[in-house]
Length: 346
Ligand SMILES: *Cc1c(COP(=O)(O)O)cnc(C)c1O
Image 1 (spheres, rainbow, N blue to C red):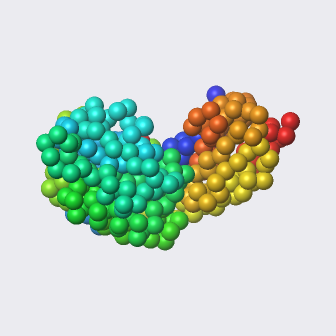
Image 2 (cartoon, rainbow, N blue to C red; image 1 turned 135 degrees about the horizontal axis):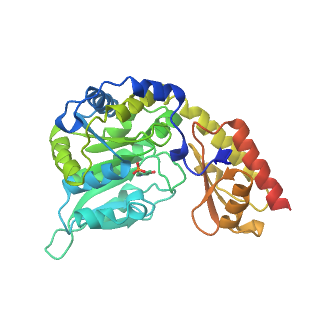
């Protein structure tokens, strides 16, 4: 039985809404891997248009979007440049090395955001004894960076350096729509400097499965090959693609509510002695806070909250991360903040 009343563990914890489920039931379907599923085709067209790219492919997960993009562009021994907080570096089971044989070069960004000089300095000279710098991978929003939004100008600067040196530029847009809603900058503007870009349907958008990777027709053609090879080609996938269509049509603007709830929660946390956070990093739906001053470790805080029906994950021994989403309302974040205050004061 689920005693959990407020789940701030991640925006992946949302359940498909009743309306989304009904929409899924009516989806037209076909054989996805033969290109015959009308719902998948429609979703891919929507995302290609949204991101201003020629074509797109529906994949089971965001992880597969990153891993396929790396596999399409890199040879074993090549190097990928990514921020030190990058998802692909920490949370993809070593996929870049395991699936593409590539090395990863972490950059020391601030809140997940690095600059053009850092990219320039990381790009290798040519010479047989060096790995080849092949691809720049950027996360917007940056997850471990705090849910931070890349300034458009900075994105243009870092990708320009990469492209001038012949690198492929890839956008990990797991939460790109959060960046769009928070900044008012259209998705295609954010995606324009990149050769490949994807969005996740299962994070803030609230769909149960899937992500969509977009790029040039050639890039997507190659991506299909690795989709098969990695075991990600599907059949009547229109059922789940429909959830993505529904999410893009109905769940984008509402992300503003998640952002307002995260802000509200962060401001409450900032008032609690013993808990600390960087309020400037709270730009979208994430709130990272530190428990060191409370006398309790982050796992201890997490356990005690859970015993009271509220879940917040911990990143390490002192750092916690709360993420707002469609299944958490204002009352929910207020309850979480109240429990934290009581716990730290007692
Ligand atoms: C969640 C996430 C991914 C992976 O997406 P999955 O659908 O969980 O595989 C990749 N990058 C970032 C920044 C993420 O937050």
